[in-house]
Length: 301
Image (cartoon, rainbow, N blue to C red; front, side, top):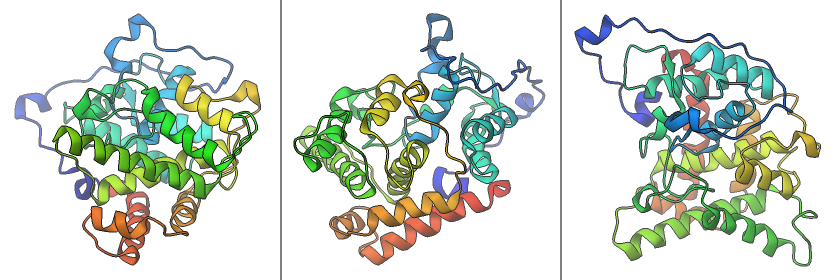
C-alpha cells in the first residue's frame, strides 16, 4: 500500500547494503508531565516538514520524551511501542505510522528514521495542512499561525458569542475547517501561479489528520477547542488541562471520523472533482476504501 500512495522505495546500492547501522537504545516511558520543546542540540532532526497529524503526533511524543527527544534514530519497534503505550493506538495503525518513517529514510537498508526524513513534499507532507504553510511558500517546517487561524475562525463562526475556552469541537465544523484550508491553499497557489497538488492521496491525508486529532483529543469528535490549540500551537498534549489518552484508537475510529465529516456533503462534489474522481460517491468510496486498506495490511508496506 505504501507503493500505491507514496511510490516504490528505491533499492539501495550494493555498497550501501553493507552499511551496519548503529542505533541508540531508547526506553519508552510515558510521562505526560515530562515535556520540553526542541532545543538547539536537537538540530534539524526535529524540524520535519511533515505536519499531518500522522507525524505531528510523533513529534509530540518526542517533545514529551516518549520518543527520543532529538527526533533521531527512531526504530520501528520503538515508534510502535510509543504509539501503543501512549495513545492506545491499534498495533496495525502504529505499524503503518512507524513504517512510513522507515520507508522515508534515504538509507534504504536502514531500520530507523529521523523525523526530518519524512519532510519530502508530497510524501506525507502535503498542501493544505491545518497548521503549516504550503511548501511552495517556504512552509512545512514550522507552525504557521495564519493557516491555523483559519481553523480557529471556522470554529468561532460556528459558535458566535462563545470564547475559545467555551467552544467544543464537532465533526461537521472540523470538516468545514479542513475544507476551508483546502480552498485557501488552492487560491494561494493560483494567485501566485504555482503548481498545486491535491489528488486522492492528499484528500486521504487531509481527512485522516482531522479524524486523527479529534479521535485523539476527544470523544466522537467532541473536545475543548483550547485542547486543540495546545496540541497544534504548543505541540504538547494537554494532560495538565485534563486530557487523557483514548481507551482505544483503531481503524473503526478513523472511519467514523471520515464518515461523519462527509455526511453533510456540502462540498463533497466539488472536492471529488478536484481530486479527479468526479462524484461524491466515488470520493467516499476512495477515502473509506484506500484509507482502510492502508491500515489492514501493514506487513505488505
